[in-house]
Length: 194
Image 1 (cartoon, one colour):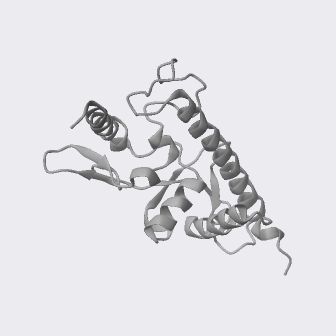
Image 2 (cartoon, one colour; image 1 turned 30 degrees about the horizontal axis):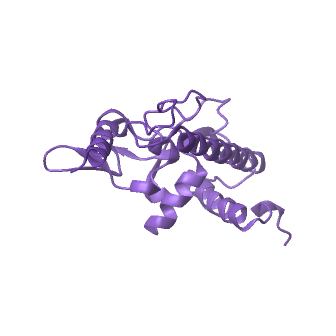
């Protein structure tokens, strides 16, 4: 095993032991849809909800507006449901390159503008150069803005007491439509005439 491969393996183990055990951080709609498409599974098969603060831009209104929840990648006893433990105890992400962007940037904070890799452009412990990290952050910021807009549009249209009680699963169906529309360059689902 060369030094690069060994460093990458060390980084993957460190990420699993310090990050994956708590579950992914700032996951957004693009992450959930990418995972769902790759696994050919509905996102509600691998997500869970957690209470959201009233001012949380990722807080999804459900149950006729009685609750606000965050949609997150599910966690189990060992941490993220996608974390795989080898017989020797080392952890690895089972998603690989499909992992949420916040996971792929570890140990960098996606919200930070500080370059964690060596300022010379040399790869960091994660194997990311400063330019690669900057690009991941740029994509993450755009995906996060779209995620917040998707949640805002959902909350604006739903959650009234006269609505049918909608669930987090209903929101994720809307998310799939909204992300497909985004990738196709078409209007938001509710803007399509019919």
